[in-house]
Length: 173
Image 1 (cartoon, rainbow, N blue to C red):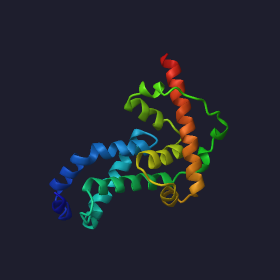
Image 2: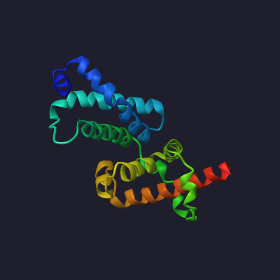
Image 3: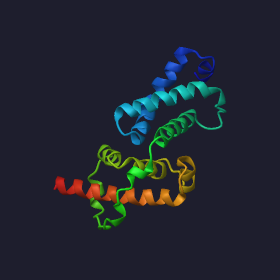
Image 4: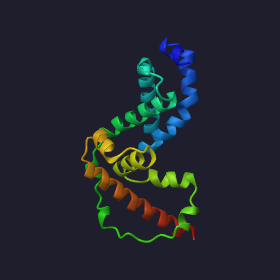
């Protein structure tokens, strides 16, 4: 299948897309502001996959290689936007204690919806750090920001997410 893509075989390209598109779309949704933007990111990413498939060295998984391209494409899309509009003063929020059982009542879909509702800058750093596993240094390099900005955005994202979870639980009760 990979060799077919290297030969620009449309059927092999189609097979790669069908095999990985849904997983990669979920990643795009985490970084995009809305569904249409996620679809654009996915399309751009797969174009990059096909254009650069000769660079795949089979040292890791093919899915991991595609995932890296998708994340980088999402970040490049994000880099056209600015963190400046995301500074909304969350540093003054109190740090309320939340009962651990609150988290037990959230399902994955609800949690992802809450993450998606975070301001874009917070969401990008949260996704890169908490979900993708990048360090603050790596995030800073990718987003061309200071490490301290990455840490600050993560703290603010966590506080806001904690507040959103708390509010969700109050409504549910």
